[in-house]
Structures are given as structure tokens and as C-alpha cells.
Image (cartoon, rainbow, N blue to C red; front, side, top):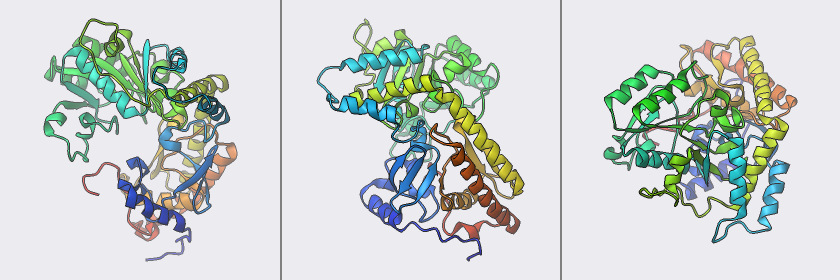
Length: 444
């Protein structure tokens, strides 16, 4: 069924490229969150290149981009300071049979930026770092169970977490049974969990903050619970690192975890992550202790010099240019504009912006104000047709005020169509295909 609002926006070359990808790469992408099932049918751009806050697809379309690299490119694509630092190291070799001096320099820089940690070990992705934290906690406590925050969507590709999701195929129940969960913001429920599994829980692992601020005293309360029950407190700072403060959420809220993991913004798109924490724990993965050895992290490419150089350049840029403050200012401008646009079109209760200004997401709600993938499809189609690539509204510091203003204008146009769909009680005529799908689902 067609309507007068069906746009003529087409992506023929991207569609062909997606077919090539699916023929060669399971899922058509190397990260499920980048899959074409996350976008309206036949409207999943395949990227040619990016510069600053803009990307171009293989069809030649330019977009203002949000959530760049799944939040990893917070300074904008091809940031000159980062690229310069990387190029310097590439001419000197990137990987050797012994540690490079860059590894010491990068560790010193990281620990100066995140002074709540005493040691750090670098890796390539967040999953390896969080799994290393879990292994270390189990070794240090001698306990088998891992307690994850049930309200946080992702911790690792490894079995201890993925077994708890709808995509648990191939993971033994015996592994999944060792992972238990607690709700965010509810100390009483966490206390009950730790009491139920008294002496069995090795660690509590959570994102210290997400789309909502932690309730007053919550993180400090978790710290006290972990101490009282003898378990390790792990903060997953993959998202909050740098976006909340240069030292992460732990630096902003003043609660020190035993272990924390960083990634995403750390390399501005280059592959680098970090496990950091108390010396007493971290040393168990080293050579200067008398206990059983822990196979903590051992990666051939974990300390590539150019990625560590990128991380140092990112940290320097954040501090010298006040990047975190700029991310917050841009996010506040965007959130205000989107909320005003949605309200002016009569959908303020249906297109909802949430989260800290530096990490905005949006919800698309149906006639009953329930989350709707169908309305999300309609909304994303309109954004794409207007030159806005926005699976979220997570900003980069490369955005200009003009980029934000353009985004708000496109959102207003999308909201006008959204209103028509709500009035009709059915977004189908404006979806032009199947709805976008959640990442975690049992069947393809």
C-alpha cells in the first residue's frame, strides 16, 4: 500500500554490497548491531568513507552520523591528531617479539587519566577485557558464579554472558547456570541475590551508568555490598569511559571498583581496549606473585603500537580540548531540539529522547506508548531519506551546530509522518517493508 509520503530514496549499490556481504560474511557484518536487519528493508547504507561527523555510502549519499562506530569514534572520523600519532608509529613497525616502549608509555598515560586504577592491560576488544575481569574475579575469590546487571544489554561475546540471551545456541546450560542477574538501582534485590548464593558469587559486573543516572548512593551501596560479601566489583566502562568523564563514570561519581574495562572511545575507531584495576588483583595475571597463575589476557595484537598511539592521542585530545564537555553541550542542544520538534508535531509522548547528553538514545512508542520496532522503522526511513544516519543520537565532538540543526529539521519532518501513522493506527503504509529487528532474538 502506497501513500503520498512514500519517498523515492533508494540505495541500489548499497543493496548490492549487502548481498555480497551476506554471501561472504555470516550476518552480513562483523558486529550484529551493524547488521542490515537493524535498518529498514533495502535502506541499510554500506559506507564508503567518513570524515568528521559525516559518512558517505557507496551510492554517493552523505549523512550526518550518530553513534559512530557503535560509540567508538567520539572525536569524529579521521581525527587529525589521532591519524598523525598512528602514522608516526606505522613507520616504526607495529608488532615485535618483545614489548615496545610504547606499551609502557601508553600504560602510564592511561593510569594518569584513570587514577582510580593501579595497573592496566591492553587488548583489542571489550569482550576479551570483560571476560578477563570475570576470570580474574573467579580466581581471586575461588567462587564460580558471575552476577550481571540484568538491565544492561551487552557485556561479552563469551559464553558466560551470551548464554543468558535469546541467542544462546551452542552454549551448554551448565555454563549459563553459573550466571545470575540483579536489577540496576535496586540494592535490596542485590543483597537478596548475594544472600541466596552466599559465598558463591565471584563478582558483580555492571555498567555504572547507562540511559539513566544511578540513584543517589547506589554505586556506593554496591561497593559496600561487594565488600561485605567478599566479591569483586567490576565496572564495564566501555560506554561511560571518556563520555562521562576522562576517568569514566568512576571518576565522575567517585566510587572505585576493583576492576574496570574500557574500550570504544579509547581508540577513536582503532582497536584497543583495557582492563584496569587494583594491583593486588591485576598482579594475579602477572609474574610477581606466589599464587596460582591466571591466564589473564594474552593477545598477539593487543599491544600494536599504532593502536596504543591512537589511545594516547585520544586521551590527550580529551583533556586539552575539553571533549567531554563538548559532547555534553552538543547532546543537550540535540536533545532539546528533538524534543521540541516531536512536541510541535504532536508526538512528544511517542518519540522520546533518553540518556545522558553525551550518550543519547531514542525510543519509538506506538499508540499505547509501548516500544515499537514498526514505528522505529518508519522513523529511521525518514531520517535516512533526510541524510541522517542515526541508530541512536549518540554525538561525536566533530558535529557542528549546523549538523545538529539539520538533524532537528529532519526529525521534525519524520515526526510529521509519525503523527499521520498514529492517527491511522498503523505505521505499515509508511514502513515500505519488514520492520527492523532486535539484535538478540532466537530465530533469524
